Length: 184
Image (cartoon, rainbow, N blue to C red; front, side, top):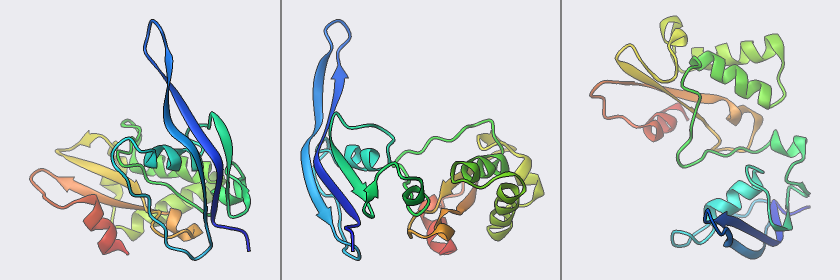
């Protein structure tokens, strides 16, 4: 069985400076292997390359040198991308899309088309109790509240790519993490 994650000499340099750009090495020759079924965590101080490694594995950025494989396939393989997910520490969503439009967009990113993408988005909104009025609100501040949309990628199954929502009313102290726990 192929390793779940495998990197070989993974390196990432970022250019810094305006007048005289120079490389800043954020990740230096990381080689590791995480076997299927193994529990693995990235631990280290700020600036040690944890987030950079995850972004390289998700192809949000590209390596300066080295290679990575997930489930035995190159990180860009479409079949692998359908089986994994990534939720950034500070996700940014398009403020002027409704929750439904945002979910349809993500469904299309994962290869669902037309009516199937729309039906999946509607089903997820129904599952988490987002009604018709909230579906019309933009994901930015709307009607005195805020609709936060976070993909739930806690489990690496196709079902886990569905999204969980929480409506933040003014003065509500609940968190998106708590909403995910309740939804699971």
